[in-house]
Length: 248
Image (cartoon, rainbow, N blue to C red; front, side, top):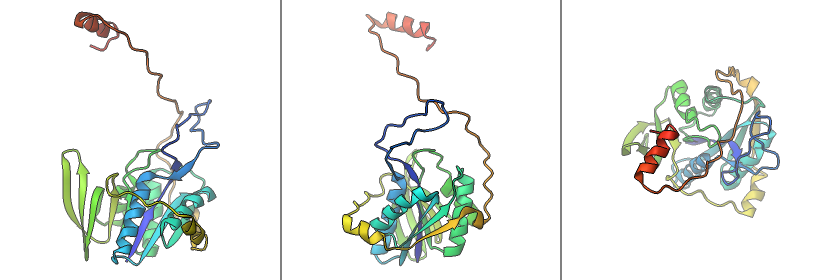
């Protein structure tokens, strides 16, 4: 069985985000970029499944320009067998990304597709669900535990009310949550080995995917500066101050 894992290049979660002075986007000059943390968890789970003997190959896929090859090579250093770059410089929205993934799925015929539940830049949490719908296969989102049982998978999901356990037939799409596992550290010998692993580049235009964006971002702005608090003498003064500020 093949496992397909989607990874995205994002600003590292330890970096403080800065908005460009003209409000046209996020300033990424000289900023550390990494694999989206949820995607890293997805890859770790795929590697553990392969190491347990339940899969033969793990393939990492990313959309973007040549800069995303850095993250694909990191995925190979973690232990993935092959990498595929869908080459594009367009800013894509979830439906177009899901459509591109579908073309790779149709080509590779994986038994399982594992994605992060969301990317930490857009926070859309839509790509996995859209891919399952386009592929017409079962989905299990927000997974905190995943167990394969032959032709099915048992998934424990993190939901608002607590935990929910479901069983889905394979092939399926799984999106993973934070508590599924702790990704492994990449060692220097693995980085060197990753340079010799295959990385295929496919132009997005060759996949025949419609990339018309349905949404347009007009501008970016940082959150407002938090106002300094004040000390009040008693509850009556607190209520009065809240009324003055229109909060009650």
